[in-house]
Image 1 (cartoon, one colour):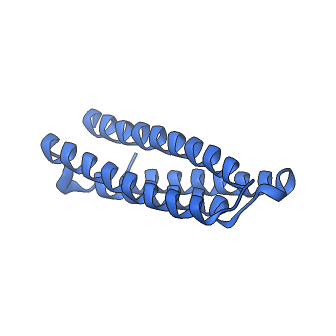
Image 2 (cartoon, helix red, strand yellow; image 1 turned 90 degrees about the vertical axis):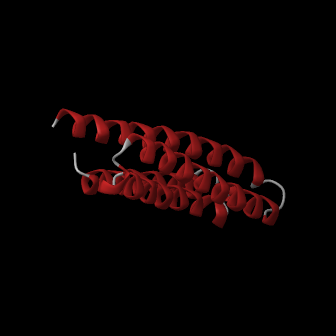
Length: 129
C-alpha cells in the first residue's frame, strides 16, 4: 500500500468513528454530549494522518531516522493530546466529564494501535517489494 492509500484509509476510519460518536451521544446520551467530546475523534484523525504523512516520507527510510521520527511524533502527539484533554476537562462542568474521559481513553488506545498497525503494514509491504 502506498502512503496516500494509508492516509485515505485513516481518514475514512476517522470519519466513521466521528459519525458513530456523534450519533451515539446525540441519540442515547444527549445530556452528556459536549463539544469537546465531539471534537475529540477529529483531533485523533488529524493527528493520525499527520503521523502517517511524516513517517512515510522517503527521508525517514533509514532505521535510525525512523526511530527518532517515530518517537518525536508520538511525543508531540502525546503533548498535544494532554493539553487538549486538560483544557477540555477543565472547561466542562459535572456530568459530561465522565463520558469524555472514557471516550478520550478509548480513542487514544484505538488510534495508537491503528497507527502502529498501519505503519508496520506500510514498512512490511515496502520491504517485500
